[in-house]
Image 1 (cartoon, rainbow, N blue to C red):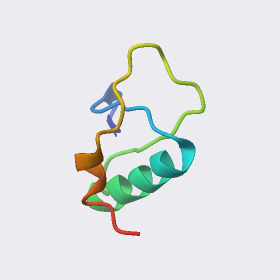
Image 2: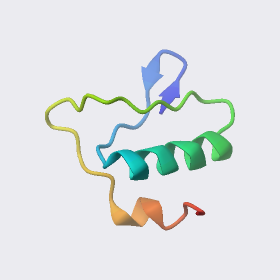
Image 3: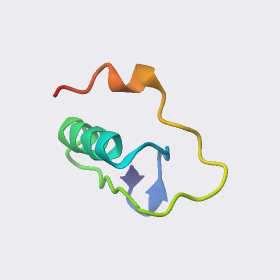
Image 4: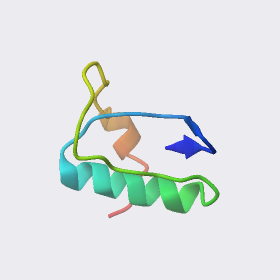
Amino acid sequence: MWFGEHVVEEYQAEAATADRYADAMAQRFRGLRVTVDDVTPDGLQPLSPERLWTIRP
């Protein structure tokens, strides 16, 4: 998730989960840019299950 030119959050997750999370965050924070990249940089922390609780199907 981005705030202008700055990355606010970065996580790794399987593609379907990442897309779902990105959609939810884009709706929640409409002014911020949310992206999903195919390439995962080393050292990125996994998307925790707690973050998925607030995602609606």
